Image 1 (cartoon, helix red, strand yellow):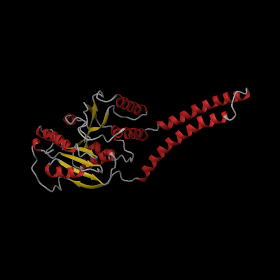
Image 2: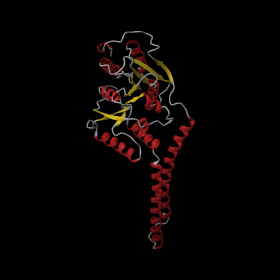
Image 3: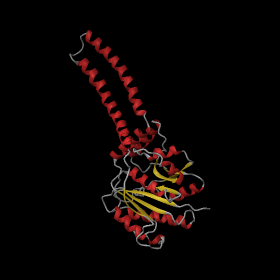
Image 4: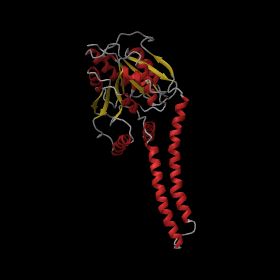
Length: 333
């Protein structure tokens, strides 16, 4: 059996509190897979610093000199989670046969990576990590998450329920993903479009090991809206349908107002106010805002600005300190 080269890509933004434990656990996973001859000993851990303001990059450089698994990319600015993840994926595909993406907070089960690799050996190009359930979430978070996935499905977006960005992808899928030139990234919607053989691995999500979530409610709502408007024109069609319905209601309201006017049962000015403000004004503002969102996305697309700029990188080739690969128990936290 040919052992593939595996790279684990970890986007990092202000993760100095959790990063030592993340490196420790993921290095242990790589070491165990190598010992079991499931992956090559050339496999690596790629940490992508997404313009962090803390000591994240300094930690990456330190781990690079003491742990031969660790490589790193430093982006010149905070490009966002999706762009940082894409930067790591595109870099990893240069030497890896398969790539696993996982967040730095250790909420995704690192032990599931072994199952990912087993599925890869069975011939699957894409393996989705899917949450077993949401019993640990608060009622509000569970309800909003379920609503998000259901809404995306109804909008016509092909997305896997309870799957975020914890997945394995083969090199050939990453090479095809590179052909997607969207500036407005929504990877969990883009990957299913590739169409290669795929499967799912279920896991139980854990509590964040340390630090604070980088996705508060405001960012989660913005991310959901970006996903919908990047993959579906259904909202525009909904506005059109709503416009016809409100036009019909306006006709009914107009007849009611005219009858009231004839019978003398209206206050002066009420007719024009109710028709112009309640119906037309609200619909126009909603429609203009939604159309403006789509125009804004078109504006970003046609400018073709780079999604990220790599400022620094530390790789196996430019390692400053050559050390022998330590045992699992030797990795310093």
